[in-house]
Length: 147
Image (cartoon, rainbow, N blue to C red):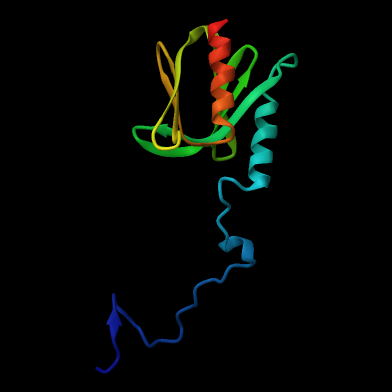
């Protein structure tokens, strides 16, 4: 009569097992997007998808944007021939390649260039909060579009 019950069990019963504690401190830490280890691993995995004669002219890292939501870690890579958008999906990469001949416009929007868009005739690739030299990336891509 004096014990409290919740969903059919006694709350004062000591036979209930305690919640498992984390085995090490890293289980409690959230790795931020800008951590050096993550960025280096992301760079290396994207570099594996480049053709041997391509050189990287510019990179930006941020979040892919779809339907006004920032979803996954993303990276724009500008080379001499194309722009790559790599998105991190669980343990794999999703890479979209867009040659400069298919790009119709490149623009930034928002406060302090918080959104970068690359538009083609069929789709729009968007990134939120790009980290890196955005003005240099835009100069490289716009220079390739002009030539």
